[in-house]
Structure formats: structure tokens, C-alpha cells
Image (tube, rainbow, N blue to C red; front, top):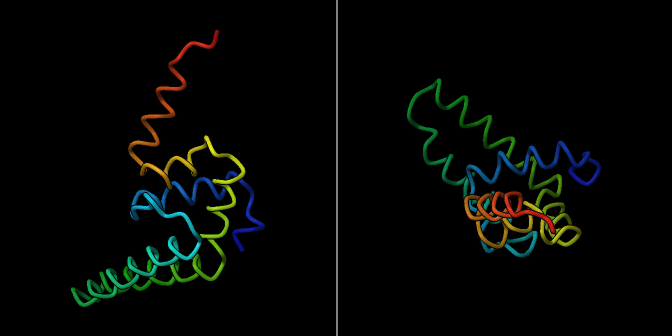
Amino acid sequence: MTDHMPDKEFHELFDRISEKIDLKGASTPAEINQRLSGKIREYGHASGTSPFASFHVENRISRLKRLIFAGFGRRAISEAIANPHGIVALTLKYGKRRAREILLKRRRKPIV
């Protein structure tokens, strides 16, 4: 379960997931799970290309299904609430690219 996953592992997983799935605007666990399900459907349509590709697609689908079952959406929302200025909250609000820009800008700003 992602609820029992250490923060470091969760953030690495969230980073990988948000590279492939646009989580901008997702504000509930159900919305995040819907986007994961959408990616599963997208992979399902692509699985008929070749037997080798099919193996990798089925593997990706299986991993995404496990994330939904494990409560990835619930954990992401909990992280966003716990740290409203962190990467998870910013990614859910603005998208991956804009969230990174905001964090980089904050780091460059001198603390007075």
C-alpha cells in the first residue's frame, strides 16, 4: 500500500507517474484514479502492435492497476494537503512543468 510507503519512495513514484500522466487539476483521489484508468485504456489500445510490445504494455497496465488498488490517489492528495507548497501539491494544481519552474524560482530567490 502506498500509505505505508516511505516518503522518498512515494515521491520517486509520483515523479515517474506525473511524467507520463497529466495530473494538473486533479483534486480528489477519484480524479487521480480516473487518469490512471485512462492511461490503462490508452495502453490497452496500443497493446496490439507486436508480441514484444504487448508484454511491456501488459506490464505497465498491471503496475497502474496496482497503484489504483494501493491508494496512490489518496496518498497524493494527503501529501498535497500536508505540504501545500511542495512538489505534489504544485503538480496537482499547475502541472509537472510549471511546478518545477515554481520550485526552481523559489530556490534561486535569496532568503533575507
